[in-house]
Structure formats: structure tokens, C-alpha cells
Image 1 (cartoon, rainbow, N blue to C red):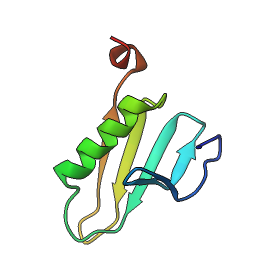
Image 2 (image 1 turned 90 degrees about the vertical axis):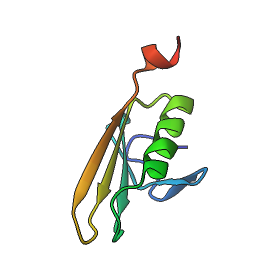
Image 3 (image 1 turned 135 degrees about the vertical axis):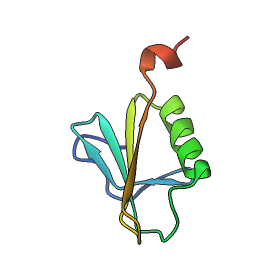
Image 4 (image 1 turned 60 degrees about the vertical axis):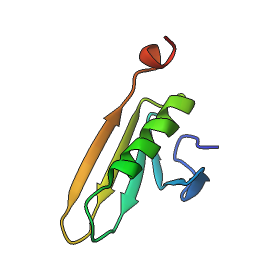
Length: 79
């Protein structure tokens, strides 16, 4: 699994986590021509729902640089 420092390119379902920061923030780095898709965002939310992580950043360095921050608190997930 992911630990402090992270396991680069760990495959979690269909989502590849490139970096784990301070055992608290997951980072997914992309280089796609298209904008971050709603499907990628939903997949990220699903991973957060099933994990102890609360924050996931998607960074896209494609033609148009963009980022998405996804936050799901563990309190919310445990309701």
C-alpha cells in the first residue's frame, strides 16, 4: 500500500497514485491533452471513500495546465 513517501505508480483500481505527501495527500500527475474528465474526478472520489486519505490532487500538465483538489473528510465518510 501507500506509505509515507509513497509507492510511485501504485495501481489502485484504475487510478494510479504517483505520490503520497506526508502520508496525507495523494497526488495523481497527468499529461493529457484533454481537460480532467468527470470520470477521473469520480474515480478519485471513490478511492478517497474507500481509503483513510482525505485529500487527492490531480495535476494535469497537458496542453492546458490545470489541477483539481478533491476533499472528502473521514468524518463525512463514516456517517
